[in-house]
Amino acid sequence: MPRFAANLSMLFTEVDFTERFARARAAGFEGVEYLFPYAYPSDLLARLLNDNNLTQVLFNLPPGDWDAGERGIACLPDRVEEFRAGVDQALDYARALGCRQLNCLAGLRPATLDEDTAWQTLVANVDYAAERLAAEGITLCLEAINSRVDMPGFVLDTSGKVMSVIEELDGSNIRLQYDLYHMQIMEGDLIRSLECLLPWIGHIQFADNPGRHEPGTGEINFSNVFAAIDGMGYEGWVGAEYRPSAETSDTLGWFDGWS
Image 1 (tube, one colour):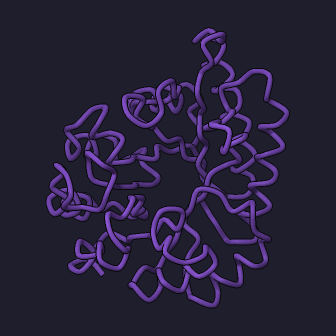
Image 2: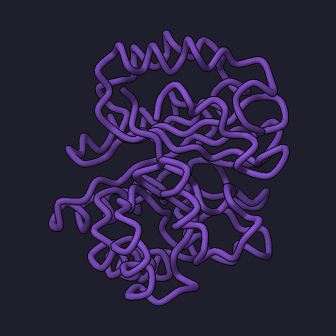
Image 3: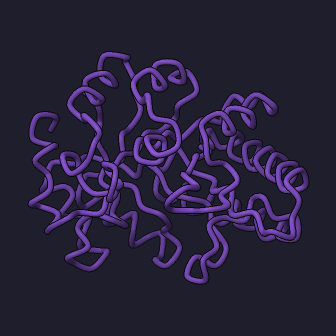
């Protein structure tokens, strides 16, 4: 049975962030993820996890100035030192929270930056991060995010591009973060893609398309997809990273058969 994690950056936003841990546990989730932990002391987050018997599944490396529209800095050659400092910060939180996977956001390529320089910078930064994380037994994920709707200009916008980085570096702790919503937009053929990419997938996330809402609001047949993931023997977590179309508790019907 797939192990589902609640993304607390998107779910249970009816309450303050620190209250979402208890809401997730009460709904039946055993794991949580969120975009970033850095606005909160790590000891507070660790206590919330412990008090609610939750596993910290994943969070992202620092992305630069998120509020200003930055979506990762790994591809930016003038931000390498900032990226490396972010790896250290993320590792501090991962240790405190017992988190065994971190996600690296590649970032948006500025029009003034040529593709080759952006790519080589990304590869070098991923290599650095993966080596630092490997020393702690932590996996580094790379997420492909669609460039058609959500993030025009995002450097890694297909699973094939992520696989190119993985193959170039051949790092034993680098994995693909496969988001069903993003890949439905960019590629489709979800079940066959999951079957082919399974050996390199470290984490799965989902939302329906279009709209990025809960399962059942769009075109993806989640009953079939979840059953396929289960049948493949995937042992990782599956993160519910959708924008609820109503109060979160009213959008969890998809979870009934899997909790």
